[in-house]
Image (cartoon, rainbow, N blue to C red):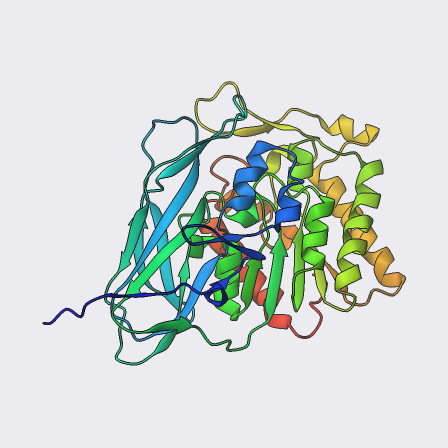
Length: 391
């Protein structure tokens, strides 16, 4: 069997999907999920890295290539500068099917822990991701999904057949914002994160503006969503506000209204679905913040607050669900007929938790990520372009 030689092809900005801004660097292209002006307003080092990560970002190409190589400079968060990384997984899909995957270790690291939040960047080597056995003898559209937990600079592409930007074949243009659960934390791969599961199942075109630990109703996030094209917007907010204990009911109510008002400035008639938190036992009734259980060596989240704290205006997940439902009902009564509420417990509730518990008492494992994605596709995305019904 003769191996065809690989030739270089330009990575064009139009190939990159799922980013809101593409930076041309001296070496290549870096996709960003926040524009430069918003990145300058980021309030802490943890969000600097998590917002730079590639959740939902992919290369969409059309090719008949059998073999594709992509050179990358990747950066991943780490506790220290020396502990070896596990390899990151890059995947290629055709339609809804994963047709190839390859692994490469992120060469650079972002050194950060909440106890030592310096966020120092330790530079390291580039990597090459190689996919083989792709060809079917005819051109087809492929999507190469970047690792959701890595910041990736795209340096070069080689293939044994021409590579061009993929066609746009329809599908709702879906913009989602959420926390680490929507970012994908604890999923095995990017195509196993629930927004990608849902997008592939429903044939939607995803822009995932989820930032681990940072779904905080930030004004710069609302303005980014306002300025980003979308046919459907979904907002999954609540658990970070409780886990960080950053807000009380008095501040939460106008913050939600302000977040929505800003988005509506750019999307006056776009369907918006506000999704409340999924089941999370530690802070269902108790107020945050969440902390690590000091009696355990492994990650296990518990609430530092109590149920009685909610009487003083602190937030629990039950409080947030009731408040969100009330706010959406009021705004719909005031004329926003394109706004809907979805109870997060319909995606993962108490009964689900008994059968499929969260491995750290806070974040879904791969099984629950897939469950949420399938349910979301069937209960929300499948209803578009009709307004998604209330649960």
